[in-house]
Image (spheres, rainbow, N blue to C red):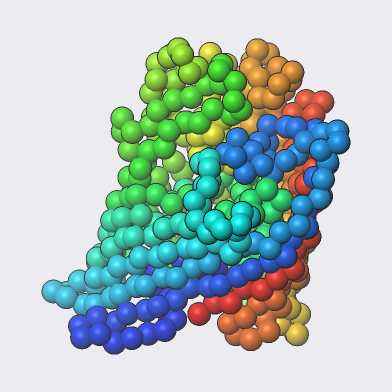
Length: 409
């Protein structure tokens, strides 16, 4: 989880004049085997299929098993951070590069086709300045504010989760994204974080607005543009220590869409909004997490995807997940989790999947995992996940077993 943190980590520390540089990150790789059965649906799998990657929840003779050697939910990560104290300000920066582990075509190490082309990302490039007495300001690209705690508490962050069947050659799989929470994503932002007041902390910011994406490939699929105004995001949290320790949090996002309509007609504008809440509580070796979200126009899996329905109306989205982990005396953590994301149609004429007018989309996943700390930096991981995607009478499944390791430095 440290690889996703915005703060500089104690990796390889190098004094450099007035600056202290910190080089950190992770390397991970997994052998995955995914069995795909059932019907073509419009769930998380169709998003990747539309991008040319094909997580293939398809029917008939196309039911298949895919075996890959790939990155997990975290990409490989190389992060360079620096910090200094100047004019009574703490000044810092972080820049990261994020290559994937796998490639699927001979002679091709980068690039590809579709929205998910390539096996290289650049997720972070930001600066911060502030002081512990009044807080911190961040400018640049980093993890979004809304739904960030949902992914940081997901146990599959250290493993694979869903998406391994069709995302080989991409930088990551999808973990629980789209089956319990929306992706926080990596966004250009200007954000302010308060000091920590006895466990209470808050962050507010303006972030880059995203365009709405059509769910499916039909000409009548509704889309919309962001960018006329920025998105507005905020988060509050409270953490405590003791025999029973933990954290509770809530966050929200609001953004305007313009030119809402089909690919040939426009219906005007509307405002996407969503909120979430969650808690993580630890009692000795046991950790429990509960999380929920609710919104309109936010869509499914990634922000804005499928959020606009028939007649330019915003679809409701809701979901959440529960999770339990227990750490054995052998430094092995066992975990189990279940979650669901639901995208609701706006009326009986609204079509999420072909032939299923007025039917809602439900993406569910349960997962079990074992995460063994072989050393303080090296974790061995074994996971099994079972995803079900439903729209009306259509049902597709993806079952993934994965085995691998993740090394933090």
